[in-house]
Amino acid sequence: MTSSVTTPDRRRWFALAIVMTAAFMDLVDVTIVNIAIPSIQRDEGATFGQIQWITAGYALAFAAGLITGGRLGDIYGRKRLFLIGIAGFTLASALCGFAVNPEMLVASRILQGGMAAMMVPQVLSIVHATFPAHERGKVFGLFGMIVGLGAVSGPLLGALLTEGNLFGLEWRPIFLINLPVGIVGLLLGRAFISESKAPRALKLDLGGVVLVTLGLLLLLYPLTRGRELGWPLWGHLMMASSVLVFAALVAYEKYKTRRDGSPLVELSLFKVKSFAAGIAVQTVFGVALGIFFLVWTLYMQVGLGWTALRAGLTGVPFSVAVSAAAGISVQKLVPRFGRKVLQAGALSMMSGLLLYIWEAGHYGAAITSWQMALPLLVMGIGMGLIVAPLTDAVLSEVPKEHAGSASGLINTVQQMGTALGLGLVSVAFFGTIGDHLAPAAIGPAFVDAFRNSLWWVVCVLGSIFVLMFALPRKPAQHIEGGGDQDAAPSEAAGPVEKATELV
Image 1 (tube, rainbow, N blue to C red):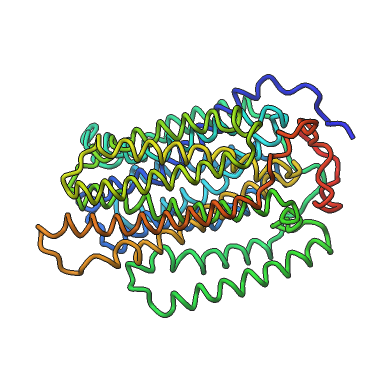
Image 2 (tube, helix red, strand yellow):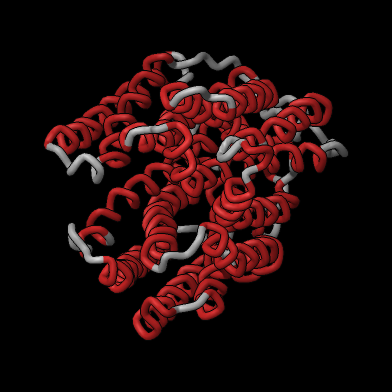
């Protein structure tokens, strides 16, 4: 079978720049709000519960809609869903920026998360459908660089915009900055992104949409808000119920596959070893990131009493290291060393964390930004060696017709893992801090809690290192002779995947 397109579209690099900008916009928006929370609370008079929903509402809507958003792209066109998503995200950003009360801000954030769930899965789908296999290493390297920049740019940009108080708008520019970016992305996306969708006529699985959304909400809502609410009994019951809902989802999706071949979640993807193993690693990696980034921010801003700007600048070595390592990992290292690159990344992150644990204990609350630079640099190199090759490995053997569904699943399990990590912060971090601390005791208590949390992250990364043995030795496109075999999906993927593909 031959591919339907023999010469790649020359516009693909413009399309890549557009979708990567949208991905960066989403990554920044997840973290930028945390820095501005004190300003929002002062300006809007928001209650603690409303403040929680400003952050949790976005995360819940985003996670719950990712799988559905990915499948909608397969059915109705990835370009179409991307443009709808970026237009809705831009509109929701405007509503956030011009919110007249906390209730409007919460509602706008939920809308923003839902629109991001339409937009983000199409990024990897468009890449998968637009670029031939031999070019994807370079593309995923660039994607890893964007992830690295987004990880730290959010807090730094949030600090600059909030402390700068542009035009006396306080916190509002953190949302309004999305408007020109979104409008330009929308206009250029229409011109340069090529449309792609599943080659056969899939139908939207409404039953699957209901079950997957319900299951994710039952799991993620108590994980997101459990600590603030004191882990009530109903939260544990919700999480237990989510297991039953997911079991019902699996049974229903098997039925849908037999009935009309249009399930929301393509279960046959899990027969592809690289995808199944990569999804497991992605989930656990999300746990590590969920714990680290929250406790790191609390440690610097509350425990050490640093300003948001100083905390953001401290993270620059980490961001630079992630970007640099991600840029070379897929293109230069993975073709030669395969999954050993990811395992080296896990070991590097563990080494950086151990160094950070030692420094935090040795210097205490007197630690400086430059003393943190080395452990952050080592950790950043490790993360860069994981994040880009992992995406490459997960998607390397996925048929293009299911790129949207696979992309939605990748993003969803990452969100699930991050939410679980945030839930574990109550044990790893707050579990070691007393309820009523004297001002002089805050610094030492946060230092101890930070070190304890990092030990948790070290243990999680150790489990990731072991899980990585289940990954293929090398992603399919890096095996000699496997460069552009997109038209010949894996035999394990089942008969549905053998349909004619469309770039």
